[in-house]
Structure formats: C-alpha cells, structure tokens
Amino acid sequence: MAAPDAAPPVPYATTLFVRDHCLCLHVQRAARALARRFDAALKPFGLTNGQFSLLMSLNRPQPAPFGPVADLLAMDRTTLTAALKPLERQGLLTISVDPRDRRSRLLSLTPEGRQRLAAALPAWRETHAAIDAEHPDVDPDRLRADLKALG
Image 1: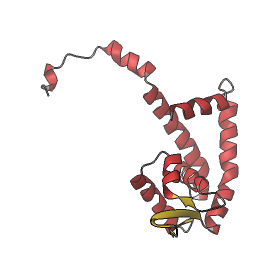
Image 2: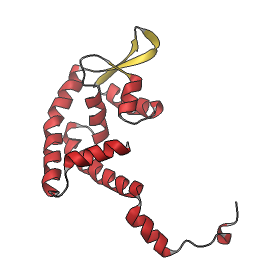
Image 3: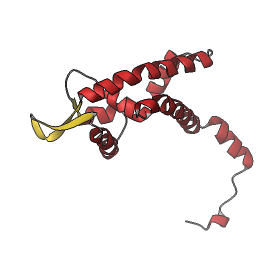
Image 4: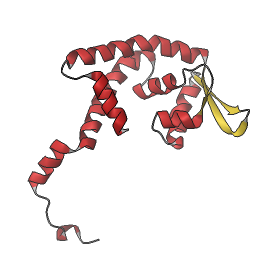
C-alpha cells in the first residue's frame, strides 16, 4: 500500500455526493434514530429495542431453533449468543438442548419473558403510531417492503 500522502486527494464534491447518495449512510442514520426512539420507549420495561425484537422472535407456540432466530434477526450466531445471555440471566428466556439433535439449542420465552413482552407491547405500538403521525408523507408499508427487499 502506498503512503497516505501519495494517494490523490478525493475532491470535496465527491464527499458531498457520497453524503447525499450513500444508501448505507442513510439507512444507518435512520436506524440509529429509530433505535434511540424505541430504546427510550422500552426503557421503563427494562428492554432495549434489540431485546424487544429478540423476545418477540421467540413468541411462538413451540421453542425456536437457534439458526432461524439468528437468520430472522440478521445476526451471526456469536452475536445472538451474546444478546441472549442477559435476557437469560433476567429469567426472560431459556436455552435448552434440542432433544432431536443434541448439538442444537432451542430458545423459549419464560412466563416472565411473556409478561415483560406483553407489558412493553403497548409502548412499542404507541411509538410506531407517533412516528407514522410525524411522517405523513411516508408510506410505512412501502418503507417496510423496501427495507425487506434490501435485507
């Protein structure tokens, strides 16, 4: 690699172009703003927006296999394991061995986890409604569809 001063300078106009056109930048900015908003709404329930999503992904009739939960949340297995630990310590979920495949793990909400999720759900709904009301020119269904297409 050449010395840093040997590289041709990037014109400032390029910086402005990237600032105005970079999908990654704009999605990250929006994600951070939304995360702060939902974190504040869910804080009284002792949850972050990520923890709420994780608990909601476990809200199913049968225990959830580890892999599909990681896929749904777009997390690698190591990151999911780290995210599960504090919720498991709080007694909100359990991690058990899959009786059909002892190498696999199953994730389940505990009664306390179901209760916490149910308590937080109205705040999540209210926050979504407030965001929708603040942005009447944004079609939330279209936005979700577009984001899903990118993901």
